[in-house]
Each structure stands twice: as C-alpha cells, then as structure tokens.
Amino acid sequence: MSDTPVRPGRPSVRKLPQLPSAVRGLAPASALRLSRPSDTWFKPALSVVVASAVPHLTLLAVGRLDLIVYTMAGSLCALYGHGLPYARRARAVAGVVLGMAAGLAVSLVTASLTGSTAVLIAVGALLAAVQKVLCDATRIGPPGHVIFTFVSSAALFAPQRLGQIPGHLALTLGAGAFAWLVALAPALVRREGPERRAVARALEAAAVCAADPGPRNRDAADPGPRHRHAAAAAVHAAWQCLLASGRPTPVRRSLERLVVHAEAAFVAPGPATGAAHPERLRAWAARTRGRGPVPTPPPAPGTADELYGIDAERAVLRAREGRRAARRALLRRLGPGSPLLPVAVRTLIGCALAGYLCAALGVGRPYWAIVTAASLYQANITLSWNRTLQRTLGNLLGVLVFAAVLPVSRISPLALVCCCLFFGFAAEALITRNYWLGSVAVTPMALLVLEFGGAHPAGELIGDRVLDTVLGAATGFLAAALVTNRRATGRVEQALDATDRARAAAERTVADPAAAPTERDRTRRALTASLVELREAGDTAAGEWWQRALPEQRLLAAERAGHRTLAATAPRRGPAAHAPSIGAE
Image 1 (cartoon, one colour):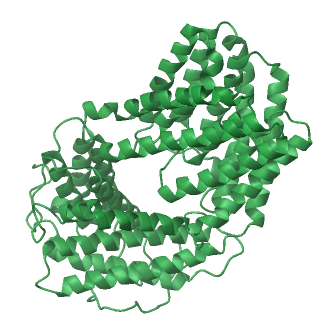
Image 2: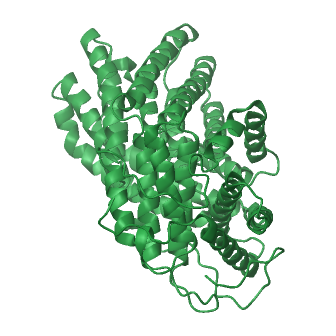
Image 3: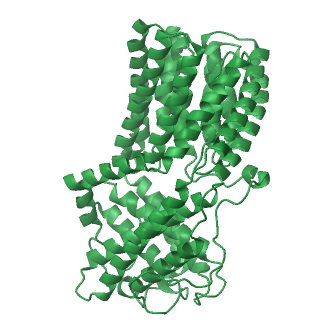
C-alpha cells in the first residue's frame, strides 16, 4: 500500500512482479493434498441424511425400495444452498428441486420413447452440458451440476413407460419438498446463522491481513497480496450475504458494523492497534460464529452509522428495475459471448465421447462414464486436470470399499438402506478435505443404489465401474485439452474495464466533500466486488492452455490501484482513532 494520493484515470504501468496464480502447472501432489475440512461440513452431511432417511424408510415399509432412485433425486436437493441466507436459500433450493425434476422428466420421457443407446448417450451429454452452464451461470455453488447429471444420466438407462412417469416425478417432487423443509429447518433455531458465519469468515480473513499487511512501499516485494485478496473476497461475500438476508434485525445491524471494521482492517492495514488488532478481530469472529450474542463493536466515524448504505442497495435490488438488471446479468452469462460456452462444449463433447466409447466396448452402464466425464470440468483446464486425478483415484478406491461392504448390505433391506445413508453422510463429511476422499464414499453409495432394484454380480459391477472411470476420465480430459477457451482472456479484459470504472467512481466520491456516506459505502463495495471478480478472472485465465497472452502488467497495476483507492476511503470511514482496548467490548 502507498501514501501516494489517489489520482483518477488508468493506472500507470511500472515494472511489476510476475502475476500470482492460484493454479500452477499439473502437480499431482498438490491436487491430492488434504486440506482442512469446511467449517460447515456437517450441515449438508446431516441434511442429506435426514432428507433421504424419511423417504428411504417409508419405501422400505411399503416394500417398494425399487423406487428409491426417484425419491433420491429429490432428497439430494438438500445438499444445496447451505451458504445462503434463509430468504435466498428458500428460492435457491426450490429452483434446484424444479431443475432436478425437469432434467429427470426429460430423461424419463426419452427412455420411454427409445431404446437406442446412441440416442440416450446424446441426450445425456446434452443434458450434462446444459446443467453445467446453468449451475455455473446461476452460481448455485457446490455440489454444482454433478448431482443433476448423475440423476438424469442414470434415469436415461432405467426401464421406463410413459404411464409411469407422472408417478415417478411425483415421488421426486415430494422428496424434494421434504428436502426443502430440511434445508430451511435451521432457521427456526438460528435465523441469522448463515450471515453470522459469513461475517465471521470476513473478520478472520481481515485478521490475517492485519497481521501480515505487507510493506507500504508499493515497489517492494509484498508477501501480503494473497491475504488482501482473500480478505476482499470474504468481505464481499459477507456484504452479499447481508444484502440477501431479508429485512433488517438488530443482529444484522451489528453484523453490518462488524463487516465495516473488517473492511477497515484490510483496505488500509497499518499498525495493529485498536479495533483493527488481529486478536480483537479474531475474538469478534469467535463470538460471531458462536451461539451467544453478536458482539457490538464501536461506531465507525464517517459512515452512515445506521445504514452503511446497505438498505438503499437492498431496496434497489428488490425494485423492479433491480430484478430486471439481475436477469440481464444472468442472460449475459448465458449469451453467445459467454466465457461459459467453451466449458459447455467441453462437457458436451467429453460426455458424448465417453458414453459412445464405453458403449462400443460393451459396457452395460455407459452413464457412469458420462457422469465421470461431466464431473471433471472446472473453471479451467488446470483445475480440470486436478479433478481428473481426484476422481480417478477416489473411484478406484471406492470400488474396493464397495467390495468390502457389499456382503453387509445384502444381509437385509434395512442394512442396505443404512449403508446408503452412511456413505451419503461420509461423502459430504470428507469431500471438503479433498474431492478424491469424498469420491471414496460416493462410489460405493452409487453402486449400492443399483441393489435396490435387485442383486447384481459383484464382479460385473466392479469391472464396469473401473472401466467407466478410466475411459470417462481419459476421454473427458482429452476433450478439455482439445476444446480451447480463448474467451478466458477476454473475461480478464472485461473485468479490467469494470475495475477501472468502479475505481473512478470511488475516487469521485472520495474527492467530493458533499458526497453522502451511503454513496461512499456503495461505491466502495462496488470497487471491492470488481476487484474480487478481477482476481477470479485472472486466476481462471492463468490455468487455461493455448490462449492469448494475459495482460499481466495491467492486471497487477489495476489491482494495486484499486486497493490504494480503497485505502483512500479509510480515513473517512475507518474505526475510531481511540478504539477501546483489545479486551474491552
């Protein structure tokens, strides 16, 4: 960070270090390394068990376990939306249920009208590509499109008659409605839980940045940019969560004030004193994440103390024009010039090749290969390579686990149901450590689902799964390598232009003594959002092969200039100069 006054206009280009990237090379060791589990891993794990147990046990009681594949399609919707505030989660999970039912309906109708394997594979690949694009465009979050593709691809190869479809879809919608209730049930106990967790993450990231802000000389080697980028992303996510959380409450007002202090700690890191002290920020984060009262920090002079501009933004988003703008933004992400289009083409070609190759080799369940290929496609080819390694290793280990568990699952129908529920929990508990570890649990669960329709030879199931995994991974990654994504650099250039505009707007409000505090807050948040988008676009493009050269110097200059502009807003809105001591409240 620098004390140089902020000047409007495009930042000058200086000698800058190499652009840091979150994705470097094809390193198997880093792709398979375990990380710390997510702080909310137990929420989707418990949700999917509860959402699945009731339909499973009901079908067990009536002796129709063969219908579990249809109720499972709805139950798996409980995996989505756990990072969203409950007001938005209700809409998001409802959309997931309807999307799941729509994909299943297409598959069931297709399966009932034709027995051609070639047609079924083509429809499966097309559905996988559409589901991938829609999940990425709507940013629904994990587990993304893979669950949709798993359900729709499996249904394509299940025997089906047109007259059965309404009943099967009713089972899916009924289980999906119950999953919707399960996903929203925690709101009865802790209404602001998602907002509290988002703000706690912002405070923790700001504490890391405050502890290691890097040198103030902008030309010096700076070890702290990754901390500032992480803090900016966490603060932006916290504001977005609060914006979507619904009507203001006293708890949400306190959370807004906490985010203001988290912002002040990362936009203008300096001496670790007062409210910006790392230990104080961490203490606030711990209390915010806990079940007790939300801490009440000291006021931040120079801000709109009651609103911080967030109520005005919320009103704009909820107005008719705000909703239209959101729809236009979604359509741009889906339009002809979308950077998602090459990923959709990769998904379509890779899934089709995987399915046709497995069918040519006589594999009875080519949908496994389709799902394997669909699961590989990430934001760029480097991340797709990592996912290829993770998926292959996890599936191969998973078939060994299946072989060990199969005798236990055949003791009784109840034992089979319990095994499926256990592996559903284990998959969500482990997948945040690394995708391959979660796949070790997903694979036996997917194989055990076939047992609900009747026992199958274990050797046949294991052999088909191994072959489908290897062929699906190989052909899927081959498609990713052959279909280039030259639009990734174009996305960086668009993000650079957006950052320049956001920075110019923020500078105008800083220079205008008559600017309202709410306007300064709004432009500051817009600049933070543009910097987060710029970093994401840069990291995505850095992991792509065979594309135009990245404007690395301009990207680094824009990021530094953006953070200097954020720092220039701090004197007007930072924490009080004489904040209470670290132990005080």
